[in-house]
Image (cartoon, chains in turn green, orange):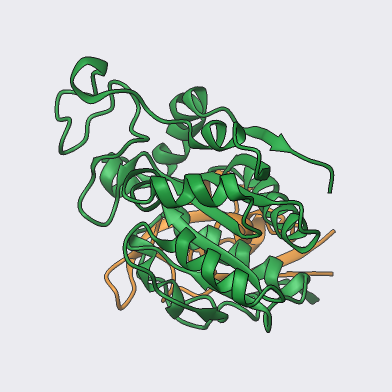
Length: 246
Length: 69
């Protein structure tokens, strides 16, 4: 028999520290597969977040540069402007991108910076213990919304892909998920497309990935995957939010 | 189409996503512990694995290698 599936070369042989059923592990693997298939390993530069994936450099075998919390899109902007031949991407969670990093992401998209952002949306602040994030759903219970998020007290969940779609510089924005085999395959295709947009210099590209966080959602991994379909994807519809000709 | 898989039990965290999504039901959770203290999942070669690799696709830990004829 021949081997039809094994660890991608761009993924280091290190056991993940992530929780059982965490979406980060799947997404890291998909990015590594795409980097291998598109032969980008020598040119890729990644800017990891502050968050559970802060240790992404232990797993993805590409050049990395850390940034202060939320500033990954600013650091990625700097790298790409100085080294346009590199394929530069940031990997950020809800807090990193939509809370502390809103300004950097908004303006990088508006300027049409030729970077790619992988936005891992799990509707909470993961690493810090499950607090409410800007992406937390109404009614969702978190450590800082123990009775459920209410609009009067806590505002509304932010659909950040739709926000960035309003800006002239954004050229490819798609929302995907990693909770089922079919969705995982679509996520991989979106990752490929986002790099293609960067290589063709169409503008700012982002893939928003709905990702399970079983620990902070207080669910089993299988339940967390179902919750994404049954609840989360109703608030954050999957699909292409914006795409210009590539 | 015949296939088989190999699970690295030391990488498995017992998340059971492979159990949930295997179309042949060839994967089952066990009560056996690995060195990290997780109850790992086992593969049953008698269930007619086709090597579709759905398990490897959903496995977060990259614990599964898939072989196909």
